[in-house]
Length: 361
Ligand SMILES: *Cc1c(COP(=O)(O)O)cnc(C)c1O
Image (tube, rainbow, N blue to C red; front, side):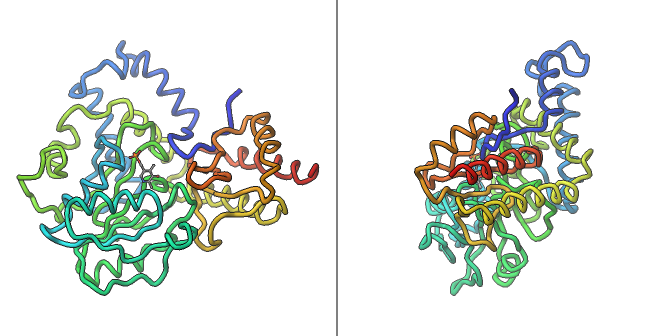
């Protein structure tokens, strides 16, 4: 039975995408070759990666002057690579600490130079997004995580951060791993956006990077692979790229476009999140884990008020084909990830068992 997949990552992909991808594993577009056994320099693959880059630009409405790259190493490598490429030598990186992923980015920046944490929600176990952020010392770039996959909080407004960066003549960098392509964004506010593919883009293996070209320092002493300029010059084909992951990303991007682009995706995502949060707030057995105004549209975290009901609820989930609902091991409770490919029907199935549990308890 196909499961209702609420996994936080790697996560659900659209069924038509999985079908097409599985066909291409055996025979890519009647070429008699598998997507897994063709040269990345072959016209078949060059067409695929170029289409993936073009669709990303089209769907996210990326202005001139930015490059779209598909790299490897995940968002985790971007923690270091972004700081390495964007910081002035001996410059200062300003970071907003909203949880595990931000903390990891901070750790990498500290290896490279001056790093300052200008805001943090650590004091309340990352249950909220810091507001009224300012800095009392100058910085060269500002880094933040737009959606905190583990805690279930999300920045809903980028304009103040963009303003803060501008006032400092600093670059704005964002880890968008878990909410990229989930809604419309204004790419122009950012100098660098990165995202591991495995949440909303495709299977693990590729990392999407959107970089404003004129911010790079053209420093030839950077390690070759870690220099964005290398990948810009080679159109994301400096070395063998993650061929299959990029192919499936291209299929997912086509699927988003077919659905009506990010306007349609956003309204679908908003409806799923609103429906589930309404039930969490209504149902006397459950509570949300974070500040209401900072709730994530992608990762909905909640708990049972009475932990003794967990075994019962877990069994009910299992029996209805609900998968991947456990909270991150560092937080506990539950986390329903509502990525693009998840249908509202799956949310309704989850809500139904929450209501059943309420009735029998
Ligand atoms: C999953 C995730 C990461 C880690 O991504 P990798 O590709 O595994 O390195 C980083 N940041 C955020 C916000 C994430 O959700």
